[in-house]
Image (cartoon, rainbow, N blue to C red; front, top):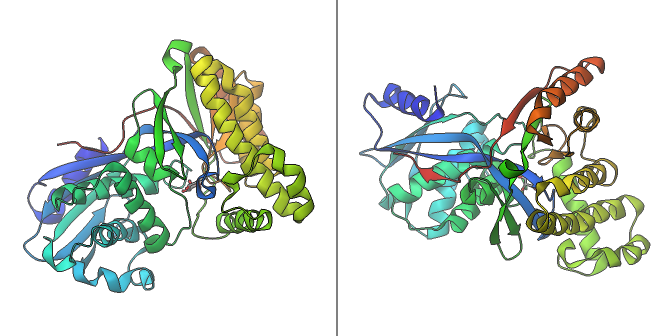
Amino acid sequence: MTAASQARDLFTELTGSGPVGTWSAPGRVNLIGEHTDYNDGFVLPFAIQQRTCVALGERADGHIRVTSTVEGETVEVDLTGLDLLFPKNRGAVPEWSTYPLGVAWALLRATGVDAASVRGVDLAIASDVPIGAGLSSSAAIEGAVAAALNDTWRLGLDRVALAQVGRTAENDAVGAPTGIMDQMASMLGRADAAIFLDCRSLEADVVDLGFTDAGLEIVVIDTGVKHSHATGGYGERREACERGAAAMGVPALRDLSVDDLARAAELMDEVTFRRVRHIVTENQRVLDTVRALREQGPSAIGELLLASHASMRDDFEISVAELDTAVDAAMAAGAVGARMTGGGFGGAAIALVAHDSVATVTDAATAAFAASGFAAPTIFSVRPSAGAARDV
Ligand code: GLA
C-alpha cells in the first residue's frame, strides 16, 4: 500500500470520514556537501521517491490533532496553546508529534497569523521514508505538513519560506540544531536532477544528474545504525565550526578557501583545524562536482565522492565502521564512487553504480557486513524525484 492510501485510511479511521486532501513531501539523499549547510556553504542534494504523506481535514474547533502510522499515540492540542509548548516545554508532548505540531507553530509565527483565527485540523501521517537512515524522514514530515497547512490556512508562503518554516520547527520545536539543506531538498526536488544550493543566499540551481543516459544509479546502503541530531556529535561539530570561524575572524567557514588553511593551522588546535579543513575542502568539492556534472556527466564525480567520504572519516570524524565498510565494499565491487550521506554517526552510505553492477555491489556489501559481524544492511536504489506537492 502506498503512503498516500495509508494516510487516507488512517484519517478515516480517526475521524469516520474522508480527508479534504492529501499532500506529500520526499526524503532526500545528499550527493555531496556534508555539514556545509550551517556554515553558509554549498550542498548538492536530491529528493528521492520515498515520501511522507499527510491526509488533512478541517475541524469545527481550534484544535490540531495528529496521528501517524509510525507511532501509536494520537496527540491533540489547542492551536492557541502551541506557544506554550515550544520551544521550552516540548517535553510535554510525545517526541514524534513535535514535528507536525512544531510546523504548525512555526508557520503561524512566520506569518504573524493569530492562532485563534485559523480553523482546527486533523492530520493523519504515513511514510515510506526509512526513519533514522540519514534520508531526512524529518524534513519529509515537515515539508508535507507545511505544504498542507499553508494551503489549508491560505498563508501564501513560497517553497523557500516553507523550507525555512520546516527548519525552525526542527531547530526550535524538535530541538535539533540542523541546517536548511534537507528542507530545501524536500521542497525543491526535481525528477532526474539535484539542487545546488547556496545556503547563505538560499539561491538554488537545478543541476541535471544525467544518470539515465550514463547508465548509472544511486544505491543506498542503510547500515541500520540509528542516529539522532538532537543529541551529541552533530551539535559538537557545529560548535567546532563556529570556534574555527571565530578564530579566523570570519562570519562563517564559507568565507574561507583552501588557500586559508595554512593560516588556520596556526591559529587553532589540531582537532578544530581538522573540522575546519573538512568544511573548506567539502565546499570546494561541491563546486567541483557541479562543474564535473555539467561538463562531463556523472561518471566523472567518483573521485570527489570518495574524497568527501575520506574527509568525513578522517577530518570531521562522523563516520562509523559500518559506513566505512559499505563504502569500501561498494568500491571494491566496481562502484564509480561512494560516500556516507547525511549527518553521520550512523544512517546510510550511497554508491554511484552502473546498472549492471548493482547486484554485485549489493552482494559485496551484504557479504562485507556479515564478515565484520554487523547486522545485515538494507540496500535499495533511489531515483531523483519531485519535491513537496498537493497530491489530491
Ligand atoms: C543533517 C542536517 C542537515 C545537514 C546534514 C549534514 O541531515 O539535517 O542540515 O547539516 O545533516 O550535511
